[in-house]
Image (cartoon, rainbow, N blue to C red):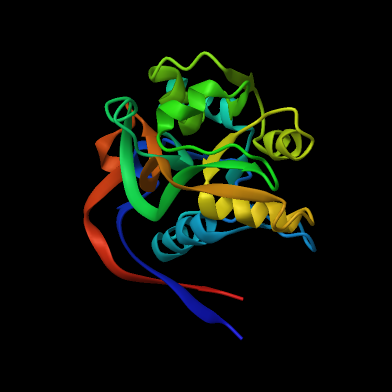
Amino acid sequence: MKTLYKIVLITLFVFNSANGENLKIMTEIFSPYQFKDSIDGHLIGISTEIVQAIQKRIGDTNKIKVYPWVRGNKILDKKKNSALFSMMRTKSRENKYKWVGPLDRLEIVFFKRKGSNITLKSIDDARKVKKIGVTKKVANYEILHSKGFKNLDVIGGSDDKNIKKLLKGRIDLWPYVKVAGLYNAKKIGQAGMIVPIPNVTLAAGDLYIAFNKNTDDKIIITPPINNLKIQAA
């Protein structure tokens, strides 16, 4: 049975074929927002289906490309008429891109291993642990780096590595989107083995589609679409 699960107010983007300019749409694997179906390998997820619904509505046929987050960021920063989702809209990123959204709301929290005696009363308390696992170019890294944290264990590629490092005790804390962290733990058969630390939120905000700042404004049009209905199996 198909279930209506998302109604959004979102700014519409289009491929302006009249100008002969292609639009490069990119994403990363970031469950449950965008990930590949385990059966047929098709890209699915909350944000994916919103973007695909917009594409279908406007007749856009550009294929969504899947890249590691760092590579997608590099392309986004350099290539005109490129777009990357789902990106958290933060103060440090505000003037770097043009924004379309929001796609969904999120909260970034600190995860610890089940049974860990680590407690936090504030973000600053996280400075006391030995290692915090973060991924380069991701919002959790940017926020903690801007706050001068010196105990960051930085990796490239996917945050999937950090959840495994947390489970193995190679890092002490993992700041990540709450719903995504819990989802990914369940996905790898480790539900309940990582625990979000309560009452301390690293950041809360909205996920967007980010466009290269030099993207032609004709590709991004307003006003917002009301009641965009998306159905998923």
